[in-house]
Length: 439
Image (cartoon, rainbow, N blue to C red):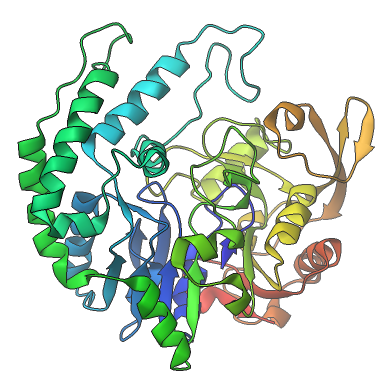
């Protein structure tokens, strides 16, 4: 299961529904910067690192090695779920997942703070506000944690939390380096550096390790053991395709492989063992943070979509930018992920519009194209070429089968299906499980 736009497509609901048909749900990328929302019988659950499948009793919920884990944040999430009666005994965390530490959050924040105030010049990245070169991260330390994973020398993994004799020296080295390289916040890069206490961190992380000990394992062997026993796995992607570090709108992307291509390195399970790919999309588009957004609506229509769709970030609470559906970007995402089935979410948000626009091509520097350009410096120049479709006045949130949708709503779904060449298997008309229409 993978998001096909800029995130927030409603993946959590689809994972929750599909989890009952699988033996384990597996997160393979991202960290606490992700937010999946699931509604069950009027109860709303906001999940960040824990896979959405945790809400299905008796199923394994696996945090793979490709995820970066803030252990204190994870424990807070576990405690919150337990307090609401959710069984977390089947939650497991890869011992190879890398750890997000306090200095990663400081590093994230100072980079955004500095870049926000950079004066505009000929090198300013497109898609940002004037005088702002920030990427628009959640400041959860995700990017710096992934950077340390690649740098290796200062990286700490979840398995290290169970080995104080190794964790202590690693923290001393990391804190010595970070204390010299991360400036105080808020300040300029020339101000005195932060000071990180390795002994205090060792105590905190060791305590986290002991609490997480029952959940930590070698998930690669576990997942292959399940497959060899004939069990089925549901891979849950965080963020979305257009935020992929390689295939998204660079540099306004996240720090991990968010597409289906990230499953292999993020779990140790080859993509060849993936049988089908469910691509999750909204009936319109949203984006959080900076970066080009060709179909963005900066008017009353965009505000109407935002309020009807409650388009505010699960993790940050930030208002999302809103716009009409972009079929150019959607076709690209379907191609990259080899999607076999589409799931259209939040169709009910478009109820009441007399007309609905969809982008079918771009005009870049006067030339029309049906290709998506993930390079932000090109995409920022893209002007959407729209077609206008009839809207539907009816409130469709009470529909409980696809046949109950009005003809114009079904025509909209079928236009999407024919435009991308992939069948639509699921249409969502509300947040609850029973507001899911199967075709």
